[in-house]
Amino acid sequence: MISYSHVKLLPSSPVSLPKTFLLLLIITVAAAVSAGFAQAQSKDDLQALIRASKTRAALVQNVQQAVVHIKVEKEIANTGRNTPNNPLDLYNDEFFERFFPGMRPPRGRGNDRFRQEGMGSGSIVRSDGYILTNHHVVGEADKIIVQLFDGRELEAKLIGTDPESDISVIKVDEQGMPVLAMGDSTEILVGESVIAVGNPFGLTQTVTFGIVSAKGRTGIGITEYEDFIQTDAAINPGNSGGPLINLEGKIVGVNTAIFTRSGGYQGIGFAVPINMARRIMNDLIDEGRVSRGWLGVGIQDVTPELAKAFRLKDNKGTLITGVMPGTPAEKAGLQKGDVVLKLNGEVVENSNALRNEIADARADATVELELVRNGAPMKMMVTLDERPKQPSRMAIPQEPPTPTPQLGFSVQELTPEMAERLGYTQVQGGVVITEVEPNSSASEAGLRAGMLVVEMDRQNIDNLADFRRVGSELSLQDGILLLVRTQQGSQYIFLQGD
Image 1 (tube, rainbow, N blue to C red):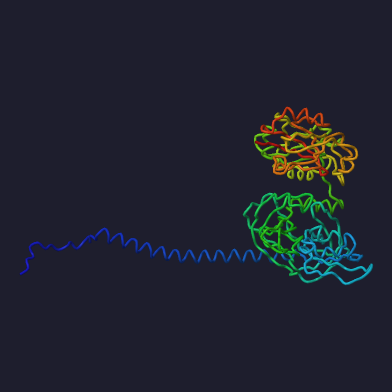
Image 2: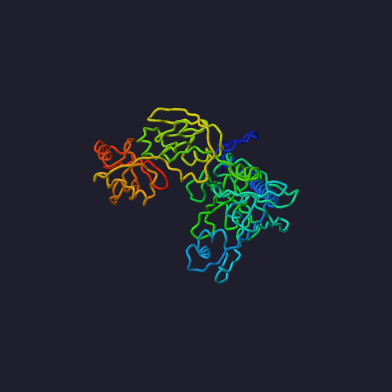
């Protein structure tokens, strides 16, 4: 018999559930709601991606109408395969393979002439038919044919070309053409999305997508003036001269070259920034030539070792290695050993940056330089000249150094015969490095036989006596600052050993 004396009915309201059960219920409901939101969010994200993709496609369709395919021809004399500088040798050259793929040596004999063909891309920049492209695409061509987006082919004429920046302008006789707007290459950021449009391998109107991999690339050895935008948007032979555009559909660069070991795309392409290309383009259209400012100095980057030798806080700026006579630099009072830190209030990162900014400033412009001389800050106003055609042929007056075993190299007096043989005919005095000890501090620092040592520890070296006198007072352990001269110019080298 069951007793009900200890059994109590639960109140009808409110119902009290165990806390564990409530927690599980909340989690279950939250998961269901979250799954619903996630599904909705996933659909929203997908739609957003589709809209972005469609927007990019619409942008590209507008851009393509202002991008042209350029075909060029040049007549070359066939003088035979056994002569020096034979043009047929170009067919085995990596540069030729890169920009004129698929070409084969023509058949000919004796003094026959043949037509060399090439291709590239370009951007229509004015509605009256002006087209921006590369010098290496059209600069040496005898005949230029432009194929438009609608398939029409028009003959173009060369308006102007600038090999030092690899920029050219051509023109077709056409009005009301679609035009690509120009952006501001200083505003693009590393990591920003960009699109390359061109005609790789003759495949017209090809579009590739990527990012800006780096900015301010110099020392590539492609052109005289370098400040490249690096991108991983696929660029191949035939893309040269075509636009690199941002997601606003504006040109930010002119595709110029690729880094490759195979002749094809390997993820590294270079474009001339549109700000540089625009100024050159306007000069070519308005004047038929490019005006560049000129200071008249030899320059080099400041390394950490040189920063230490010149008592600088860091290795920013550019070091003056020589001043040419009768130039704006000499008239303003610049001296070798000065370190330029700012130009018109803007920090100078390296020697290429200074060189480019001086060139962009044009002739007759007055610029303000902030520099350090012997550890003391200075400001200087300089009025620039027009850059000579071949400034490298103007001599920078310098002086030279001598041999001691502990330095790791040997020297001898610079005789007139040796000066003639080494190309130092305009140098007064000096000592020539005749031998550099392998694996020495001198070798690691970059000293080579044939260089002239013109200064030691900021003191002039005119002969062996100067070299021995100054060298005897210096310690390799503390470090020795040398100014050396080559046929290419002057540079400072900091030599230090154990």
